[in-house]
Image (cartoon, rainbow, N blue to C red):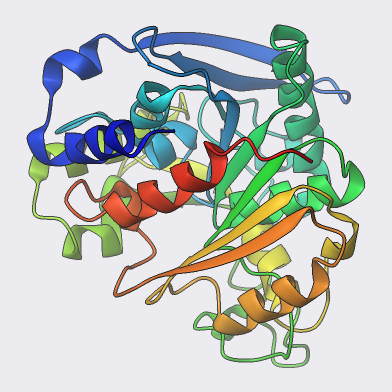
Length: 344
């Protein structure tokens, strides 16, 4: 990618080029997983892009679905749209139990005391279904980049450890991984007897989030009511029964909390030593989900990766990719990594 094109893409959040955003094409679809669930995928492409940088899979984080995670289009273009404008064909995946994808039986009303909903080993089936569809559409391209937000990166890492040749480029963004136990801000969610086990007395199989709760910490970082309303709207819209509750709220699974609690307390979910793709470990200096220990341990374990790059975003928060005036360094790091199309 030329530096001129990269500069133009990174300038868009500041100039808020509305006509350009309106030109981006969206195609919504559903793909079926091997265990019979229907998961939502959105394709985002910009025919005006000067280069073809190949397919790029984006996955949601642990509470809102993928549209709130990566495709908030107010006040300017979303991250997905900017990646498409740079030349990627972007695919956004809602993991099961999130956004517009099927909810699992563990998330049925009244099932709160049952098995924890949506564990990492289940989500890799959703990623597999999306990858199959992407490969079908890009049969002659061996390139495929992938990026998840926090838990989304943990899922992608788990998948890549089982299917080492699936991704050419993996961005591990704000994700936990492992290392010495401790130092995780949310450790109080564990039981008194076992630091790696979720306290089921306080955390049911799934939970319900209001618009105010999902905005939460983000509202302290961005003073834009239109953005916050759109973010909350996209987070809420996947649960068709959200408006039937008082107050209105959307369901989201507790699996990401339970899995991450294990990761940060010495119980790994996967071995990154099996991953063979190029890997960018990308973390905000002030992230509250991942720890510096996760970065160091992951970097140490990636001994079979085609290449490993670590970038820390100075002064940035967990939400930096969502903040139009602050996400320039995030976009620059991602595009410099994925646009290189480095040979394997």
